[in-house]
Image 1 (cartoon, rainbow, N blue to C red):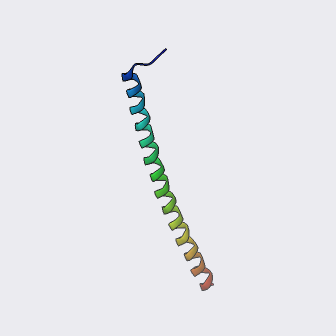
Image 2: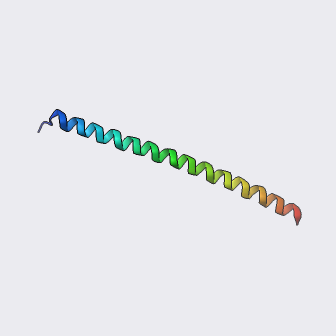
Image 3: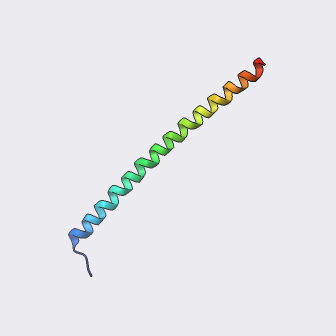
Length: 54
């Protein structure tokens, strides 16, 4: 069965919306990963400082 143009346009819009949502989620994951990496570095630095004190 052939789709009407309006159905195709709706599908295209839905795909664009989902793609935008995926891009936003990916950006959030990148930001979260950066934050985790920063915290890990802080923990490593603190661990080094604590070892020096012992």
